[in-house]
Image (cartoon, rainbow over all chains, first blue to last red; front, side, top):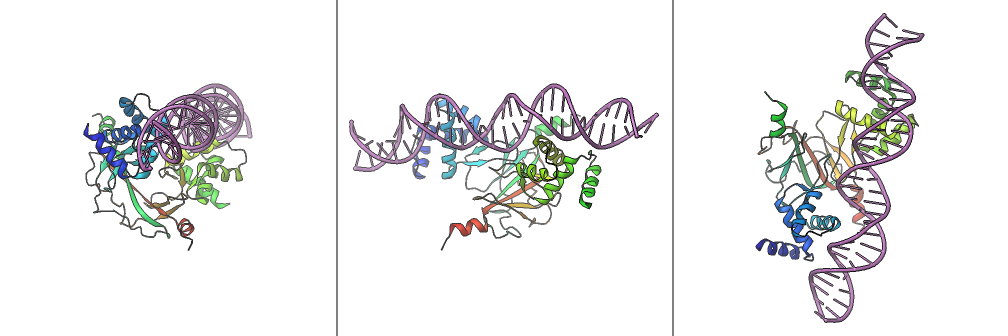
Length: 144
Length: 144
DNA sequence: GCTCTTTCTTGAACGAGTCAAGAAAGAGCG
DNA sequence: CGCTCTTTCTTGACTCGTTCAAGAAAGAGC
């Protein structure tokens, strides 16, 4: 399994210890983009049936702090995680079913990063969430 | 108190019953922008000492659904409410203390509303959150 | 291997928010 | 003004994602 080696490199590169829960969490997040914590726990237990939920929570926090995964949490949703980091992409969220899809940044690199009046804040990221209705929910709502 | 009459008009205009909790919640949200639910409850109890928390939760939901207040919830925060609606403004959030400030939309009307690839989603809103450090926290972090 | 630190397990706890049943209060109408 | 019907509020229990805490286990350098 070459991926496990890649994950090991990622962890070491970030100065983190290589533990089986962390490797499994990295794999789970990569295989299930936008998964919530419960789904990640389920996926991780495919490899390690006895991991505690707390180990997954800890790993997700550590990996997020290290920048190896990204945490997203649209209004009204639980925390979700993805492995695409540092590429400045955004998300479309379905108001109806909560489905999330990636959206590449339309406006060059960091879009709208320059706020009109930043009130003295030092801004380092502009996060964009597009709200709408996914194809499935749109179809279900207009039957004819 | 002329404001109470204004709120009454707002409620009637939205087809909602005029109740004392709702009027008080409208006033509290207007006086305390970006307040969380607990703060709103506290402010409302300045007028109506015996309102239940549930009445405030219900009122906030109803007012949000009617478009009279707007709910915002940056990642990692509890729900917050504001009375500026329909003017397409955004928010700066301090990563350190959670402070929120309004930012008027820099890019004309609906900024970045056109996603590069919307995956078939019908998008109706683009929400922008600027993440950074507020003046207070920036000063506290660089003492010299 | 040994030792030290970090991480994981176990299980309890927290807190924002929701659910549910009955009481109270709007609002239209005679 | 009072009646009736519907909506809303009160009360209190409860859910669920997440965190806390103490001790056991497992990385990593030497």
